[in-house]
Amino acid sequence: MIRHTQATVSHNMKAPIETVVMITEKLLERGRDAEEAGMLKGANNACKLMGYLMDDLLDRQMLESGNFSAKFCQFNVTECVKEVIDTLKIKFDKKGNKLDF
Image 1 (cartoon, rainbow, N blue to C red):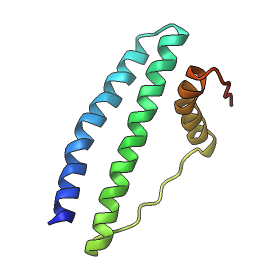
Image 2 (tube, one colour; image 1 turned 90 degrees about the vertical axis):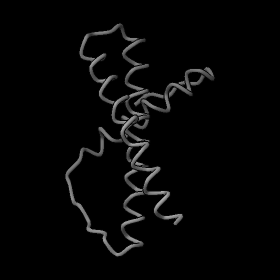
Image 3 (spheres, helix red, strand yellow; image 1 turned 90 degrees about the horizontal axis):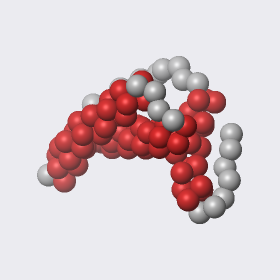
Image 4 (cartoon, rainbow, N blue to C red; image 1 turned 30 degrees about the horizontal axis):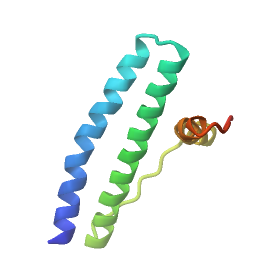
């Protein structure tokens, strides 16, 4: 019962997260000043990270149920680290600290 509830919650949270990702990407395409673009990128990255967390929860459920299959994909490590730093940069800037990549 708990596993089913977790899977349902994870699926229900994915749709709004994916919507925010799409909206922030559309807003970024329209051209923004540097500050607005930075905030939109931060929101976009945070939502993507939340989506990855939801995927991990769903993968865990599939693993526990015996229905898991691994997916292999290529990704750019540098870009991944940059996205994490961009997300954390907002908090650092707010506290008066500097974080650059």
